[in-house]
Length: 487
Ligand code: MCA
Ligand code: AMP
Image (cartoon, rainbow, N blue to C red):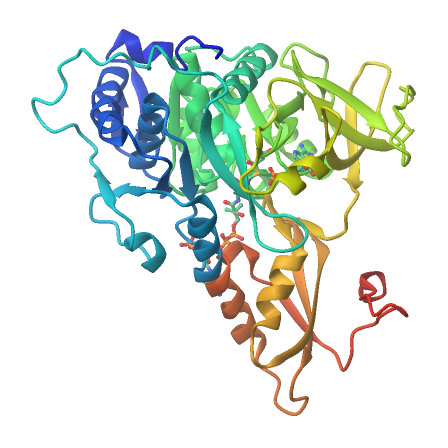
C-alpha cells in the first residue's frame, strides 16, 4: 500500500480563510474541517455513498467528508431521469445517500439509508482532534465513481483514485501557476469531474477559495470576478454566452479584467468566441483537455505564448502520444498529421466499475485510448480535430452517447425507429437531433412529448433539441443505420 500525504493540507491549518463560497454561504477552512470531519466519522464502514449533487455547499462538504473517511462517493445529477438513476444506483450499490437536510430524493435514492448534510456542525461535536485526513489513506483507494456516457447503452462508472485526483490537481497547479491566493469562480454542475474535482477539490487542495455561483449567468460571473475572483472555469457554452453579453454591455466586459486566468473545456471553444472575449475583456481564454477517465492530460500553460486553437502541451507527469489506425505511434510533429490520442500517467482512472471487459478494451497496454483525434506541432501542442466515434455528442460541455438516447426513444410506445445525430450549434457546440419513425404514421407522438420522455428517463441535458420525423431510416445491407445519410 502506498500512502500519500493529506489531500487537503490546508484543512489542517483550521484557518479562518474562506475555503468555499456558495452565494452568501461561506465556509472557512476551520468550519469546513469541523463540518466535514463530523460527517466523515459517520461514514466509517460504508462501502460507497451516493451524494445528491445539488449546486450547494452541502455537496462539497459531503465530497470532502467522503474523502476524509476514505469511502468512495458517487455524485448524482439532481436532474437525473428515472431510468438513468435506477441504473446508477443498481450499478454502484451505495449503502448510504448524503443530501442537504430537507432535499427531496427520488424513489431509488429515497429507498437508501440517508444522512442529512448540515451546513454547520452540531454544537459540541467538533473537538478539534480530527485530523484533516486519515493518516493511513492508501493512494490507490477509490475516491470517486463518476458516471460518463459511452456511445451505446447505459453510463459507465469511472473509478477515480485519490492518487489520480491529487496528481491531476498538482499538475494543473504547475501549468496554471495556481496557488492559495487564487479564487476560482464557476457555476459548473457538481456531479462531473470539471465542477467537482477541478472546481471544488482543486481550490481546496491549493488552500485557496472556490466561489460557486449556484447557477450560471454572465452577470453573476462579472460580479464574482469584480469581487476578487482570479480564475474562471467554464464550458464553451458559458464563454459563448459571456462573449455575447460582453459585446452588448461594457460593464460586463470590464469586470473580468481582474481575473488572471479564464479556462475552458471540455469541448472546443470556437475561434470567434476566443476573439470576442479577448477584444471585450483583454483576457485570453486558455483551453485544457481531459476526460472523466483520464482527468486532465494537456493544457495551455499560463507561462507559454498564446496558443489559441490548441489544448496546449502534456501536463507534468502525463505521457501523451498519437497513434495511427494500426495503433502505431506517430512521430510527426508537423501540426498536420492526425492520430488518435493515447495517454499514460498517474492521472488515469482505475477501472470502469463492474465492467472488466470495457476497462480492458479501453487500454492498449498501459496506454488509455481516448478516441480523440489530434495533431501535434513542433512545440508539443495538441490540436483536437474530432472524435473517432460519431456517436459521441458534446452538447453544452456534456458528453452524451447517441445509443443511450436512441434506447430511451425506442422505449416510447409511439416510436418504431430512432436514430440520434448531432448538428453544429453556436451556443451548445453540438445540438442533439432525433430522427423518428413513428409507429402510427397518421398520429405520431409530438416532438415535445418525445423530448419530455427523454428528459424524464435520462436527464434534461440529454433531451433532443430537434425532432425530425421520417417514413424509414436509411440502412445498409446489414441493417445498420447510415447516420451519414441523415446529416
Ligand atoms: C428543459 N428543461 C427540462 C426540459 N426542458 N427539464 C425537464 N424536461 C424537459 N423537457 C430544464 C432543465 O432541467 C434546466 O432546468 C433548464 O430547462 C435548462 O436546461 P439545460 O439543458 O441544462 O440548459 P442549457 O441552457 O442548455 O444549459 C447550458 C449549460 C449546461 C448551463 C452550459 O449545459 C451546463 O451546465 N453545462 C456544463 C457541463 C459540464 O460541466 N461538463 C463537464 C463534464 P433549470 O432551469 O432548473 O436549470 S466533462 C468533464 O468533467 C471532463 C472531465 C472535463 O474535461 O471537464
Ligand atoms: P467527458 O468524458 O464527458 O469528460 O468528455 C471528455 C471529452 O471531451 C474528451 O474525450 C474530448 O473529446 C472532449 N474534450 C475535452 N476537453 C476538450 C477541449 N478543450 N477541446 C476539445 N475537446 C475536448
